[in-house]
Amino acid sequence: MNAAPAGAAPSLSARARAIGADIAARHAEAVDRESRFPTEAFDALRRERLLGAMVPTELGGGGASLFEVAAACHALARGCASTGMIYAMHQIQVACLVNHGSNGWHRELMARMAAEQLLLGSATTEAETGGDIRNSVCAVEADQGTGEGRFTLAKNASVISYGDQSDVILVTARRNPDAPSSDQVLVVLTRDDYRLEKTTLWDAMGMRGTCSDGYRLEAAGVTDQILPLAYADLSAQTMLPVTHILWSSTWLGIAADAVSRARAFVRSEARRKPGTTPACAVRLAEATAKLQQMKTVILTAIRQYELACGSPELLTTLSFATAMGTLKVTTSELVREVVEAAIRTCGLAGYRNDTPYSLGRHLRDAHSAALMIGNDRIMSHIATQLLVQRDGSGPFE
Ligand SMILES: Cc1cc2nc3c(=O)[nH]c(=O)nc-3n(C[C@H](O)[C@H](O)[C@H](O)COP(=O)(O)OP(=O)(O)OC[C@H]3O[C@@H](n4cnc5c(N)ncnc54)[C@H](O)[C@@H]3O)c2cc1C
Image (cartoon, rainbow, N blue to C red; front, side, top):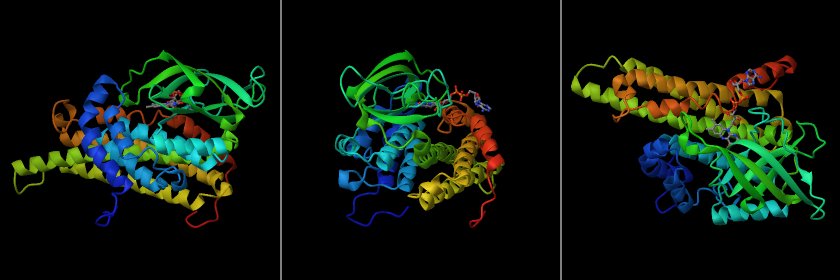
């Protein structure tokens, strides 16, 4: 990224880099150890007005592109993976509202998101259906008691990251109690609309700062809060591609920090034996090559998304869905491989928890990537799609 001209406000990614390198990195160990929300980093993101980055400028937001937000997720995750992932999950929900929230209620909320720097969470996973987020037991029920246009819903949400800190939660639910499990809508709920009762506590191997507790969610609202597009289409056009791009960018940040530590280790070894290339530099080269591979597939996916953006036909092709699924599977495997190569580079200094080259947290955080919508689930979905997909006729196909 180019530096901002003298006198111009720093870019979104420059501000995210500063927060990631200074505040998020400084508190990352404590966030991980205590499995607590990264409060300091989010206070700073609010001060810099970065929670409203993707809200359109006419509604008071920053009007940032997906590329800029991806760069911000990467910069934050370099300092603290949980901070980067929370920022990514928040922006995925913002993108759904920006792309599909067309009525007055949604626009008013977007203006509030920018003005009040609201934090958005997500409740797609259900205790009954697990990672199969394209099916819901939870249903929107017309509320006969309180008058026309009102609804209630209840969900056994087995994972809602930063549920306690969220100001708004986007919830998947069946369109009505008689609808099939796959006929879902996305419902936008503000804190005043719902009540959360905690059912499980998040004590996980990694991504400990996401505070991904389980809840029973009960809500009531007006039907204007329901995004009009069917969730299947909304997911294909926005939620799925944006999720995979921003998650991948976050994992790239974890991998980049691991490579930085490995490079610093190799340099310190080289200083001890001037004139020789340390043997472990070969592993650093391997980690760097895989990091570069991650970067390339993410940039390609962003370009593919930008080219298809605004065209529901292109966004819903099987080849686009396959490209986005493949992105997630590829980067989620590569992040672990990069961190492992960085550990091999540093040897004991990377394996120990008390050196400047420690990589245990990176490895634990990286292991969440393959599980956040299981890679095998995605691959079996892609395998089914391949049965009906025709060869493409566009460039590079
Ligand atoms: C850090 C983190 C934060 C999260 N935050 C949220 C959040 O804010 N909101 C939210 O709703 N959810 C959240 N989730 C949950 C996430 O979106 C997935 O729903 C969850 O990770 C899937 O959990 P699972 O592995 O138990 O379920 P499943 O997907 O049911 O998988 C169980 C196992 O079965 C395998 N499997 C499943 N289907 C197939 C198949 N067809 N073929 C072969 N194998 C298959 C999987 O690979 C896996 O090994 C979060 C998860 C993580 C790790």
